[in-house]
Image (tube, rainbow over all chains, first blue to last red; front, side):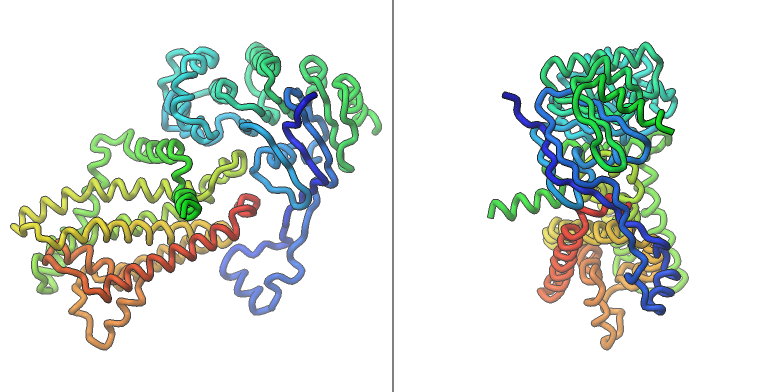
Length: 250
Length: 263
């Protein structure tokens, strides 16, 4: 029997948008005088509706879908960046939210200093980083560049460092949002193999991607999202077919 | 009781000590890495402006205050902490948008670590005050035992205001200019360049309307004249500190779940 790692119950998410968002005092005063501070200028844009999902411990889920259907919003809700407007989300275990690799890197600091900074932002402790520091350094292949300020890193190097920090810390649930788009093919494959290795260790993995072949090769489950919600949830190769089909209709 | 303690430690980000530590380390390193004299500049700038004010007020305007340079120095160093904390605390949420939008973080940690960084600078500046004490041959008095408590009130008041400003700034970007302008008035409305008894009797109440008014009396005169604050002055300082702290907690709880979508 497998345990649930993430449960979505009737989740909906919408965002407030203003037609003309009052931002400066002039506008606010104008609105006050016209008595239209709240009236009519707020609108809600619905992104996700009626999502019911149960992701089990040890699943390797590939999430696919067109741009703007809410894949990133879904991940951000799992991570806890956004709260659902309706419904509830339960997660079990420690989450590594890799919605952007190297989030919070300080450009003036060296790669090594940024490892500690980034790990603390991701919610890991000092001892854990110290324990894993050699593995992180080795995997990143940065060698002596690790002592240079990350301002001088190429985008590939930034991804290597960010990915290396994220996967070596002890999270139960890893969320990846199209982060493998940068970096050369060699490192991409190395990353996917590392993710696959983590999956075999029993970690739960959610990968948002636009490459159906990745889903077919690595995932144990595929979810396809579209405007109306989850349109497919099941086997990776059928999901990938469904995703390709989205673009053949027109 | 334990609930209150854990709520308080959450409000001060103590449940994520390693994060606070790294953010402060980042702030300090980024600020000083490439400069030859590094931290010394941050200590010299308020000291330098204290000297300028001293020359103008003491020699040009002939204002007569006991141990004038020491009095100004002891006031301007905490004021520099106060004003720079409010500005960088206010900007800490908006400035870290890309981070808040990607990783779930206890948002109060960003203004908190900014202000703690400035507080460390303040503590490191205190030897300058001691040096001026030595130069003006003012011996330390028992009035200095008030100082740790005064610093604690100053820190809490500043953090509360900084957090409130940081939250409001997300929704209302004009705040930056308002605060910059207000700080200029605020500086002269606070007894840093003059002593409280120079204020006309019938305007003395204005001191109590200033959240840091009576606090700065204590910060400068406890050093320069060995002054013990009156119980009324303590009450006003503590009252403002508590009120602002409660407002900051209230404001923070109200918006913390939704603010990330607006930043």
